[in-house]
Each structure stands twice: as C-alpha cells, then as structure tokens.
Image (cartoon, rainbow, N blue to C red):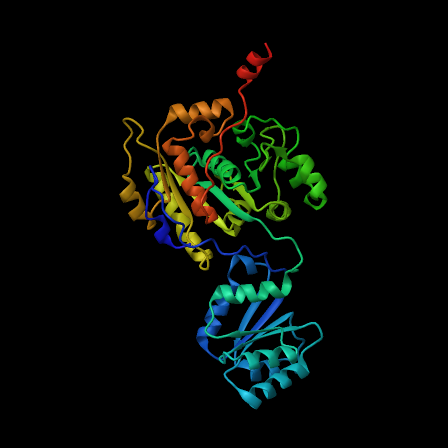
Length: 425
C-alpha cells in the first residue's frame, strides 16, 4: 500500500477509494539453505534484500558472483544446498551448455531457479523440460524472489494463511488495545471476515473486559505447551464473541509467571493464522525479543501514539527500525489518539507527523465519555455510537488495513433485554 493512501487524517474521514489491496499473504519459508550466483551486482543486491525479508527469516542465504560457471565449479567439490539461484546472461546453446554443466554437479533434491535476461516462452519451456524449477526474467524485485522461493517450499494444497495485524502503543496508556479491539470488531462485522483477536498482554490484558467475557482458559494455556495446540484445542480455548469474531484472551492474573520463548508465541500464532483470514495481534508495551519479533513479522503494523514528546520519540524509533527491518513492506500505520485533552499541552498533529516522517492514518479526538462508557459496559464504540466520528475512523482504518470497503451496516435485528422482558410480560 502506498503512503499516498494515508495523506488524509480522518477525524471525519471522507469517502475515498482504497488504492492498492495489500500484497498477498505468503507463508514463511522453512529453514533451508540458499546459494545465489549472480552476474550483475544489482541482481545480487536485490537477492540480498530478499534474504533480509521477514518471510525468509528462517532461511540461510549467501550471495556469490560468477553466474552459472562459478556455481558449477563450486559444487564439483562441495554438496549443493536446498536451493540454487543462478543468473545468466547467456542465450541459445551456450545457455543450455552451462545449465547441463550445473546439472551434472547438483545433488538429488536440490532445486534450481534460473534468472535470465530473455523474455521468451520457448526458453522458459525448455528450461522447465530440462528440470529447472523456475525461470525468472531480470530485472527483478525482492518480492518476486520471495514469491518464487515461497512457491517452491510452501505446499500449494495447504490452507491459506491469514493476515496478521499487530497493534502496539508507542508508550503505555495510548489506547492501542482499545483501537485493536474496535478495528477487529469492524473487520468482523462490516467485512464479514472471520477474525481472532489475540491478547498477548498476559498479566494485564483487557480484551476479555472489552468484550465482556471472562474465560477460564485462553492463550496462556496454548503458550505453555505450543506443541499440543491443534484445531480441536484451539476451538476449546477460543471465546466466540460473534458469528465472525473470536477472542484468544489473556489470563490477566498475577499469581503466575509468563516467561515464554519467542518461538512459543510464533508457533501459536502460526496455528491461529491457519484458521482465519485475519488475526489481530494485541501486543503489550514492552520491548523484548518476542514482542520485537512478532511486531516486525506482522503483515501490517499499527502504532498508536498520543500527542506528547515521549510518544513522538518512541514512535519515531519504531518507524526507523521498521524501515530498516522491513524494506520490502509498507511503513507502519500511525494512529494519534486522545487529541484535544483540555488544558494539556500537546504537540500539533502536523508537527508530530513531520518529526516522524509519516502522515497519520487516523487521528482520534479525546472523548472520555464515549470510550469510558464502552469500556465499562464491555461494548465496542460502534455499538454505542454507530454514526459517530470515532466509529467512522475505525472503519477507515479497517479499510486501509484490509484493502477493501466495509459493507453497509445492517439493521440490528436483536431486541434489547428490556424489550424482550416487556414482550414476555
């Protein structure tokens, strides 16, 4: 998604088209070894950028120069890796001669992707006939390399993996969890998309309170033994909030210690993402190996800040790190919350955005009455104020994250408890 789609600051969001739908969600590539042999330094740089991508985080990639000749020489005395990416400038008989020399030294099971400069379907067909797994035409983008590798190592018959949207506050008390829960609600109700909200603030999570549920089991039980989690156990641990929304609640107790490894969180989320199209990852405001890993591994990131100096500093640090670690992804979305608190000095939204270097996707005005009532009643903002500016803001943010328009609201067919009791009487 381009940053142009974020130029509006929708306190009262205008109707506007979503520019580009989010890129297709690709499953992470497993732990494999990849060797690349390039003839152009530019190609090597692109492959190196692809290797730094979050979707290839488990793979081990090394880039060499020299093309097919260098690859054939290297493996005369060494075993071949799981995958070889090899660039060639050759054509005709020279091209297929180099390919035959490489084939002679390749071990069984090694896959080969050729990067050529001939956009010719007959060349492609002959490559495939001779056992090449994929033929790509230069120039490439890092995402093309990632997609090609993913197609080779991800089971095409496996169920699609759901998009993960990670929410984190730039500091404590910014309202990140409230925004995560309301956006998840909006995606489930307005887009009729199945959503699971995962509350990863294990000691102080509020998802159970916000949805008026107090489950006896939840995500901590899965994290304690991630190897046991399957579809049956997941269904038992989830709380059904509506037809399309389920909650993976935090225990929110202090008599247990929650000291899990990052791999446990990653394993649980991988299983959750295989069951629904959208997973909301509600991260606590702590900086640890597992929160960092989950934040930057998400398909979309939403950072919530308040208009003060600490939020500005922290949000800028997160944005700068995201640019470094996610060069093939769009920038995180910035939400500025609680704007206009009476008598509180604030950094103007324009100055805040200029300092960070990104326009906010959403600006929410301070509205303690509405948000306080929703929190105390265990309701979502849309349930209390379906036509209000905050509700429109959450719909706008959901649209930006999902890349499509919400569906029109349906008339609420549910009668209130008072009306049902009155009718019975």
